[in-house]
Length: 166
Image (cartoon, rainbow, N blue to C red; front, side, top):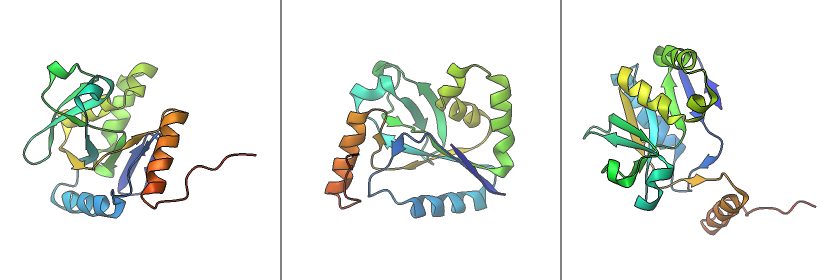
């Protein structure tokens, strides 16, 4: 899902949730500061990735300024030393939005469009893409992972857990 205003486009896969410790307002403040310095810079969230999950995630490699310098879609753990995953949570400023249009025009297949990390790799070749750390994320792609997410958020005092439908 993409949200657009006159100056910012935000993308979210809708199956990614962040824990209660993640503060969207802090993320947005950091994005605004970065955009002041570089109005074309793009922004993503990075999350630590356990070694056993590397081959199931889009893995980013960053430099000391948190700029993405490499991206690998579902690599083997031996193919990268990075243990940072990049869930589908992207902010693209209006000044760089043409890259999204161009990417979609040059990648018409569903497989390429479904692997959204490939967009991050493409953007990183064209603009400064900054990774903002988050403590973890929930990949709610199944009922079991959704229920686990609800239990953990409820334990953290967020919401009141899943509701059974009648």
